[in-house]
Amino acid sequence: MSLILYSSDGLVTRMNEQSGLPDSFPQTLMCLLADDIGPSLLAAAYRAGGIVFATPESIFHFEDGLDARDPIVTPMVDRIGRARSLELLINAKELDSAEASLLGIIDGVASIAEFEDKIAEISTLSKSSMIQAALLVRRQKGLTAKQAMLLERYNFALRFASADQKEGIDAFLKKRKPEFS
Image 1 (cartoon, one colour):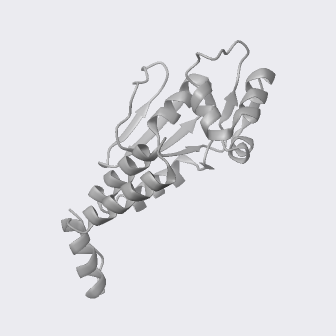
Image 2: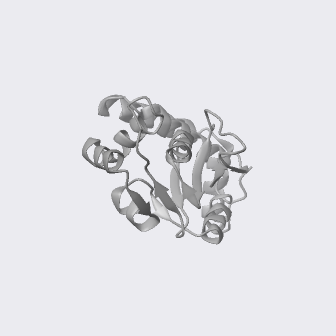
């Protein structure tokens, strides 16, 4: 059972349930679950935020005995809805990655190599823009549509004051790849 995290500051962190899972994961953009995934590892991935992937070989276990205080319940209900969450938790089902993806428990299926390719692709982007995007997504939870639009508009305007925005425009105009700081 393992969890690989990629954060907006470029760090790749590998952890498992035996090594202990922290309560928060600042600036996580993507995470990859591997092997046998129980409720506590899935809850850690949800707490990390970002896009949640699982390897094709991963198996999700929802054992009997979970109650409303279990850390997986609230984020799962938020993610896939009450009816599906209730069905999974009551029936104590076991799912493969494809089924978990179809139900919306995870966002996609990727091998470790594919996940590392995604990391390599994302690492060429502006780090400050990724940090702002991750923070914006986390801040929007619980806001009304109007409040969320105002927050997004404010953050969009802030991006125009950044050195990375200037580099991006300059690179576009000169038809070259940007070199973000």
